Length: 222
Image 1 (cartoon, helix red, strand yellow):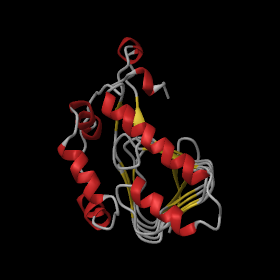
Image 2 (tube, rainbow, N blue to C red):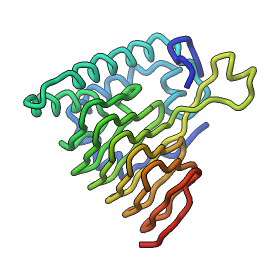
Image 3 (spheres, rainbow, N blue to C red):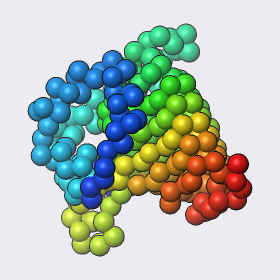
Image 4 (cartoon, rainbow, N blue to C red):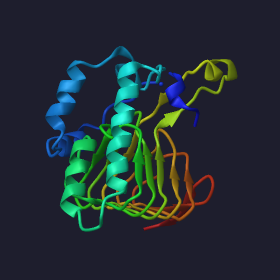
């Protein structure tokens, strides 16, 4: 990924209403998010909508700094500070229902991430959330899972000029994602699916199947 703090720009996608409704109300930061939306800059609106946007926008820079400060605090906390970690996740994430994320964890903004019940992410999880990431109930992420919504134009001139955009990612209920798997922008993963270790997921994954490889393909029905 390019250095967004240099200044950049994001297509449109429909919101995942079911996951958003199920999780946003449980977020400790929901009221703050609503207030922030009311004062949303034009570049932030375009970013969340999946349109080309400038990541050098002052508000977006400030929000990335906030996310980095919170994740730094989280990643350097003691294992005995479990309740404090939950508090910080509640402040950071758009929807959080008390799951566990093992340090280290990194994200762009945090407020575009909506987690269902009984969520667990092992060490070294990265979620680039310039667009929304919706993860359902009872999902497991093995060590080193990366989830990307951020991407860049294929046209070199546009890309070098600082254009950036994103595509939302949706993950259903009861999904298990293996170690070092990569979920690319715009992907939807169906309920009960399993993503094998090291898989690079570039297309939607049907429910009730196992996918693996690069690019990931269905290797087994469940």
